[in-house]
Amino acid sequence: MTIIGIPAGWPADEDAARDVQRELRGRLVLGESGPPPGEGHVTGLDVAYDDERDLVAAAAVVLDARTLDVVEEATAVGRVSFPYVPGLLAFREIPTVLAALDSLSADPGLLVCDGYGLAHPRRFGLASHLGVLTGRPSIGVAKNPFTFTYGQPGDARGDFTPLLADGEEVGRALRTQAGVKPVYVSVGHRVSLDNACAHTLLLSPRYRVPETTRHADSLCRRALKEAQESLGSLGSV
Image (cartoon, rainbow, N blue to C red; front, side, top):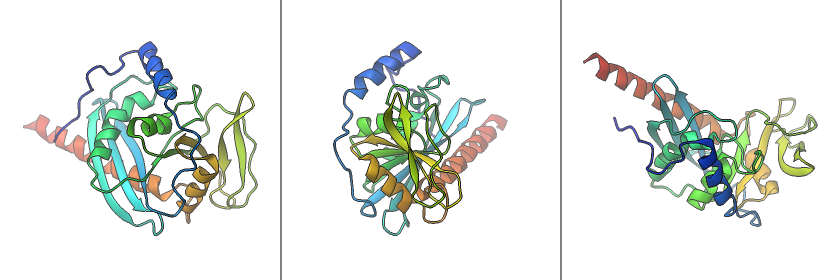
């Protein structure tokens, strides 16, 4: 089993990581509408951690945007590359996520992250970070609210309210299923907020969470379990 190491020159402390965020933030593209919802490919990305072993497992699952059938999937296991610091979580997992993405042969299309993009204290969450590094359109669909102000959307599927930071709309609380608590959608890179929400609704025909996230969550957990079992067997030899 190959475990991905921490890249040379990777930020080692909070100040260095924030410097990288500021530099990459200047490369964000926010004026594009992005790929049409329901066309091409969409790729779900998620990670699972084993903090005791200092491991992170990443999964990338490509779906057909129209049928939601799985086209291809890939995983990678690496060392956690940064300590836990709110607002800098992307630095813990990006090298391993990029390794999973690089393993794909299919065009990933739109990247759908289990996290945030612009809805971030410095307007540069995981979805934005990955979008800039890969050059691909990306959105964040989070299961839990962050530190922003929002009202509860109406009960119908598709209802939404803005996520506000200092009066700026940085995302939306979006109801993907009637009567079920919302998800929290934000732009990552090269996608409009309207299209980000349209993609999220199409990816969530039956459940609160998009199919991209459901597939990637299950796959990264399996990959982590296999890595743990492999390391356990190596340790017992």
